[in-house]
Image (cartoon, rainbow, N blue to C red; front, side):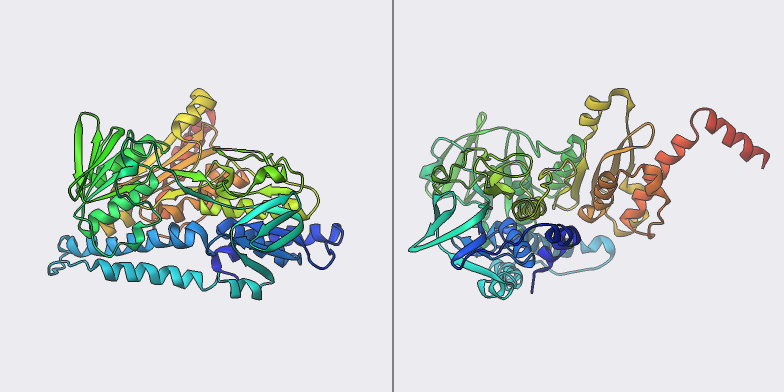
Length: 496
């Protein structure tokens, strides 16, 4: 059975693909050769292989180690399970503000780890080689290397195909910090295997991974110090500042400086940053990710790449005409949902006629701290740069959203970036469940819906989305009541 994650992505393309398939020629090939070989068994690879099999293509999926990739084993799934455990601990500690008394909160890190691993297994059961074989995907486990543009070797087996899709993902980026290679440290690949809670956790990197894990471990009982030149550098500055404020209030310490040296003193890891040193019993390096391009012998296939990723054109085709690439290995956005979307496009373009663009300006994303911070489209600064004085911002604090007040979670805001005419340019939301709420704006940008159109839809009350409707209504009212039209409406209202 196709996993929920891939089934959702598949719905969007099924009707289009069915129509195009009827126009295209048969893809049947001689025995022993595949229509498509997908290299990489993470989100992009799973999506590509599943979609190709649904189209009726003969497809093989090659994975170096284990099916599922970062998202299942070391990223989305375990991190959200860990954040959930941390949220439960935090809720128990702060329950008194709701009139609920609890005893001392005890965190059993071994049990937390077990619950995280169970979440992984629950997702993985739909991604096992056996499950994929039932969907019509041949699975080959082992490190692949190209022996030409139409064949890869995996161990003693050679797989020939008319088309290939590279979906090799990315790995933790390890910065060039003096002494780092001489001390024990962990990345997101090992952090979810910890069976004991660090007393003092040092985190190098203040991006999304660093911030999510910082809040999780602080709430579980560690003292966390985050070291980075800037907190959440790619996020709307107001949203980044608010997230930092919330985490600092919970006890996370922030050092806005670059780590320049690391050393080991006894059982302590010592990090030099600026003029000071910081000590801990665990060091987590969360300095970003780097595309996986090594070991594939891409040169033999004529595929060009750099440290930034595999080079592709607007349709995701590499420098080898029969080889495409999708997801994190291409560089750019490092989001599971974007990788899955690109994988569908890559399969469509590889197997069906009339290629479509494999990049989008409408890519929503979410930081899964508490509160969440979600964004899509242009930021306030970007809109001002592009539209000048025509760019406007309308916002509402969560303290004026009834559901947030009822929940006692008023840290946050809803900010919509738009033109004076009401065209939606982007949105940033800092709130519980912001990742769900932002989808409304992703749809608006995709379908080019303006604020007035969105405001007409009745939103359920009391929800965080009802706060969105209030902001949209403010934009629509401002447009309607401005200029001559506004003066006429006011006159009619007084006479009524």
